[in-house]
Image 1 (cartoon, rainbow, N blue to C red):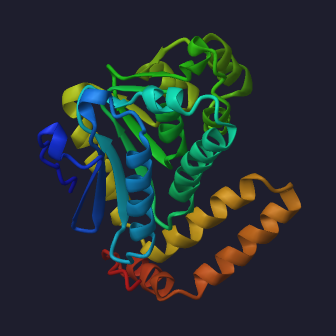
Image 2 (image 1 turned 180 degrees about the vertical axis):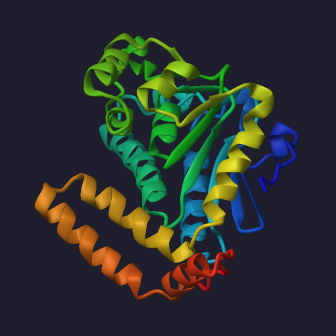
Image 3 (image 1 turned 30 degrees about the horizontal axis):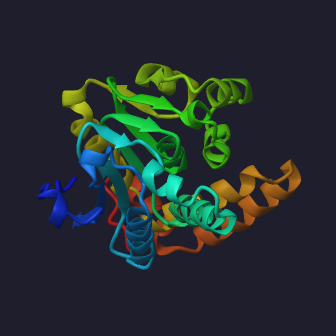
Length: 269
């Protein structure tokens, strides 16, 4: 189901390549020679694609992938250096990047990070912002801004929502790298697989998702992230309201009937 994009010559290559097949959209980070550093153009392209997909009801799942040996090495340090003394420009950059990360969470469908290589700083933030992540065992992860004198403050937001506090802070103040099996054990990613099994593992997860009711997933994803920040009584109140609205969907009647009749449901949403 994952549509592979062809890599072009660098001078002709857009920073984001988008493909959709059978309800699965794949967004490719496409600056392989720059380790898919998140340049201004790449962030703008990614935001544009996320906004477009948010309105496309035919899309059931999104895969975020990357060409080359790195998933993403984070922000483009050359661009950052040129704006380094300009507070407003720096602030605008991190606001733009934060909007991309929040847009991933706001999408009505699950987003899976397909991590084939290095994911550092804002690249690690991108992995942490996706709903699910599957990585090759050879991938490595770090929030290494501290090594150039910059605490990874914005990446820490996503990191701390995936990894236990002391582990997250350790990575932030040391800049050290962890491998994919460790990232899996710590909760940053869902699966760590041999490199030649990465596409198959991602496609298995995609198939599991697209087999479910689109309406149920739309209701559930929005509720899941909202309730995390709520006290327990408010979280249950929200969950009950969302579940009641979900019950009104035709998919629920179809799903229950299919279960009782021992057949595969045909979703209507």
